[in-house]
Amino acid sequence: MPIATPEIYAEMLDRAKAGGFAYPAINVTSSQTLNAALRGFAEAESDGIVQVSTGGAEFLSGATVKDMVTGATALAEYARVVADKYPVTVALHTDHCPKDKLDGFMRPLIDISLERVSRGLDPLFQSHMWDGSAVPLEENLQIAQELLDKCARARVIMEMEIGVVGGEEDGVVGEINEKLYTTPGDALATAEAVGLGERGRYLLAATFGNVHGVYKPGHVKLRPGVLKELQEAVGAKYGKEKPFDLVFHGGSGSSLEEIHEAISYGVVKMNIDTDTQYAFTRPIADHMFRNYDGVLKVDGDVGNKKAYDPRSYGKSAEAGMAARVVEACQHLKSAGTKIS
Image (cartoon, rainbow, N blue to C red):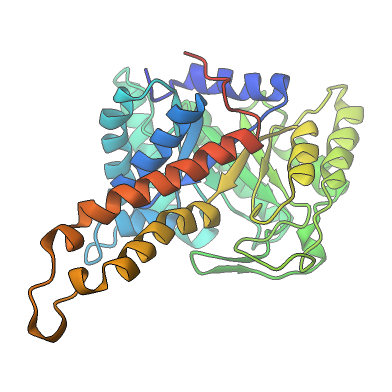
């Protein structure tokens, strides 16, 4: 079953942590970028995670509909059909959901999964992210408790964030300040509030200088050692080695050394968006520049239908993004580790 069951998803995460690798979590915004992600995973012989943000889900529903739940549901249903043709297993995930969008995105999607599970089906998505980084930690954890309970009943894994990822994504802006670095105290408070898996499994996006988007080298300082400190502080209290399943956000421009160090501290998932967006768009730009007179009806000419047929440049875009997904799998050491 190419779309992971809850049990297979848990196995995927366990294998990553034990094997010292992480899964690329590829943000998609269309059927074509989904196909590119699936193709990349297959070519790398890696299982993986496909995810959609609030903005991506709204876009998927149509520019005039703008309904996040409709777009996310459509993506999940489409993925179930096309993923069956690829020899890898993928999990479906929803990305950053801030407090003001919980009632219009994450909660309704969990409700859909609860209804599906009541009928003996698998949940619609395998995991959802609650992003409480913009609210005080105490409120973040209170909401996380409620959502974790609901996710557990829906057989869904929750992802949550403590600390702040800087930069901008889908209109949410994180300031670049000391909150980019999660503290051991934050981690201990998290373990106390939501447990370490006994109340429901969750992934933790702890920040260590992460920033969304692309920045010149030296603009932001990543400190992967922060993750080690968090794991050790909580592990010492609860007698558990690497108690958290960690997520790496805002990794564009990170060095391989930084990525591999983060994985060694328990990172099992790394979000990939900015880099794959560029890898998808770059071949389209190349096509337009090379076929300028064909894609435009210049000076009353008729153009070239083969040049402006979306399939002509769409194929190149899919191939370009798939190649970047393969590269991500290689960087995260998941290439060649597929379950099936």
